[in-house]
Image (cartoon, rainbow, N blue to C red; front, top):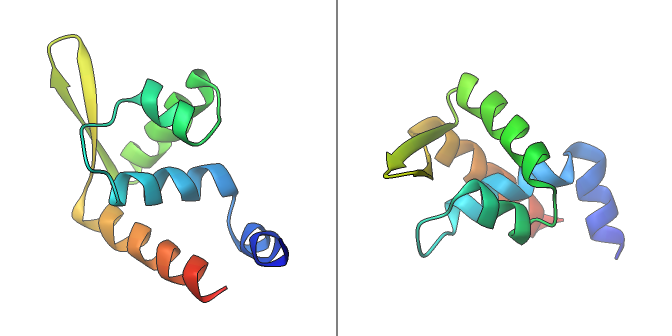
Length: 89
């Protein structure tokens, strides 16, 4: 699929898709479920999420032993922009 290749030139696929998945979520998402959704290892997802958290894109909300992932306002704007570009391509 040519469009996917073009998209991957501009964005690293896994981190970009993580933001889009969080934007379009219909239920609580945890790092483990996000890893399965974007076909990535749990440790890689956690590493990326920590960087996104430092950049102010993602929040971790503790619910018991689990951490629910949510986008910040800034993260939502970035995810929407990525999704729009993905759809245009």
